[in-house]
Image (cartoon, rainbow, N blue to C red; front, side, top):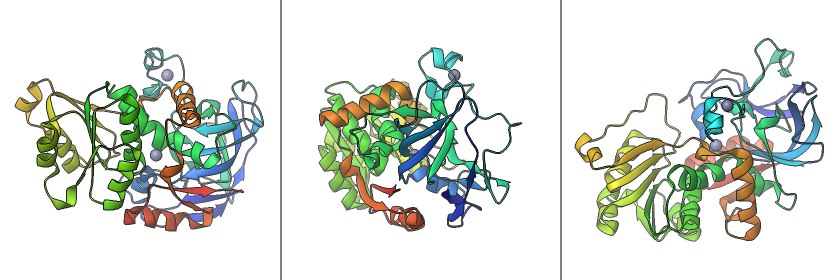
Length: 358
Ligand SMILES: [Zn+2]
Ligand SMILES: [Zn+2]
């Protein structure tokens, strides 16, 4: 099968022929139908977060189960599935506390097993335990979530990262309550889902902040009540003027500068939730006296998602018409166009490009 492989940070992905093994116990082989391009892929491809190579990139995929290994009970061949990058063990303390997204014993292949995927006999890894830019996935069954067959694959794929990360950060991590005010910094594929998550949660005011006018227009479509173009002045002062300090500032960029801006937007008692995937060396500073006024700072990993609970809920919201997935897709591309898709992302003009597989 064909896959887009990172062989060295800073270089374009190359399309390679990959040999896939038959599923071992607990593993599932999936024929991929759609796969979204996410900024987290780009962070690794640019070398801002280190990762062993060669590796099949991509971590936001939907497809159909082709075959299952021994002992797999959750899915059967023919099931429609979406990936989630953090398989849960179901037994560790964090899993039992209802926080499987920070599972401390995430099941995966053990190191002494033979390579599951190879290129010319050499092992190739899978990014985020998924490796979604590929015609097939070989993953642990707990990397998969079943979804209704009525959802088109291109929309379903986005649930697995961009949507669950954005909506989950609002609903699960920040726990935005009806009537609260929310500022969102960064209105790309994840940020737009923060905006529509805040709408779903009943926020009274949703202030979207970005430096690209197109993204701010999209944010309005997804439910922003106010928009601020951060290229035109200080966004912190603009938020303070609009709302006098917000209950929630949600940072989706992953830079020290935007983190500090988000903190500055909070009113007393407000909560900053960091979603953006930062470079390894990023560090932000806070004014401790300001923090003392019951402000809070927290991270949100994959929307604090309990994958098998939250992703079917999101799918149902889509089917009910309360979440918009189609408007998140700005381009459909082929696997061979994956590098051009990331160039478009760097240009800032897209929400999500989705690779379609036939
Ligand atoms: Zn992602
Ligand atoms: Zn666990």
